[in-house]
Image (cartoon, rainbow over all chains, first blue to last red):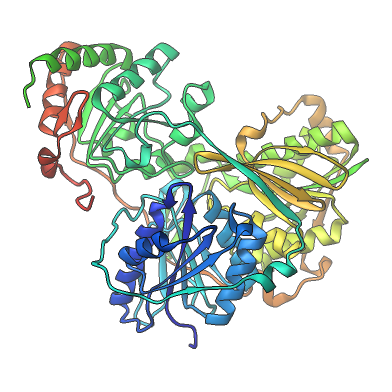
Length: 339
Length: 286
């Protein structure tokens, strides 16, 4: 095979680079070592105003060579331009593996690129390894995470795979060394852009409290939260504990929670040190999004709830009975704690 | 202006039954016996969006599905909701397709059925959930697309303005027709099927299309046309040895607060770092 090396397509965000880019770089280094891959791990970043900060960050996270594609046309994600740029790069340099974050943009970018390159894409991998022949084995969930399957793409290159933010978790920090940083010119590619899709702008949601994916403690509510008042108690509990609020589908449908708070295969994956599930029965797709939490505490009035099977501490009770007492107990105790 | 709209739907095992899914460890196949198939939930939102456009601008809504013959039930349901006609792409040669081969086959099906101003799909399927078919279908059709659309309007006869769900953000885009939009579930609330709709559906046309009816390159369909293939499958065990807290609500809360303290919780101050190392199976890598 002439195709060589592992690429990580990093993503520029409003505050720098998305964390999943660093998670992927750590994984790429691990794969390189495991498969005794000779070629350096390459980070590719598309965006605007990509100064030294970006290359330093990518290098620190494990990139051994860096390709920056810096252009005002890449300010916002736009699938046609982004995929055209990466297609040109991949055809010229022929990487063996391309890893991408399954962010909102990445989930669209990867299959578009895969179709343009006529190759395979493994979506939302939860793990990956190289087999004895050096092919990528991507472990992907199906049926809401109930089933895990290995996906291979042995006869086509590059092998593309996406991973949701937070799934790999681990980020590494390398001491500074110099690494080659290249800037890739896209003038010719942009000249061919038909302008069929134009990005006008992006509006960020106002974030309340700790971001869900970064919180060390998550209080999540589900179907068993029967009223807005109880939902507010759950929010109070999270505030008292200094954690973030997550949810399953029903609170979202009620309008109590936002889409960005949903935990599960079609929402976010979290791995807090402590997870408290209140009124959550534990459908597979939710469990898939919280199974890696440290201590799992579940409160549900139905003793047969599947969530109890994956919990460290089980409380069979009504949320309405426990929440006010818990908040009160925690607030009362706060006064006599000296730490 | 009348719009010629296509909606691609998938027939999926009902997500309510996922607990019943087992795998045959010998043959390494998934057993979904007895689990009913339904229209992939978010695909109904795509159909609803199409029906609304038709109500507003006139035109025609065609529903397309690639599946074994049993999926005609889902197509009749789509016609009962209001689609004008339906086509089922069914052929043993289509089986075992990954997203690239599936989207190629769907594209050839659409090319066979006509020239569409707009192709609508759901963002992802409930079973495979790769969310890859919409983008790849647009690539095969050589039309622009947007994925994860939560709102859109026909701004002019040639252009759609759309709001796209990003990570904790909303992106705004303009896209030229013909185009493909993959819509998310918050875009609308799909209508219910009525008895009248079911009766009307029986008189509508369902076309069966096999590979012989399409202009397909056989090296691009089914398992042969799929760059990816499946290896081992497993059902992971996530069980934890749990401890039950029992007693009156007051007693339970007292025990729970003690547990939280042991795990490093200090109220209003979040986690205390030095106490967090002794937690069971949690992450240790920061």
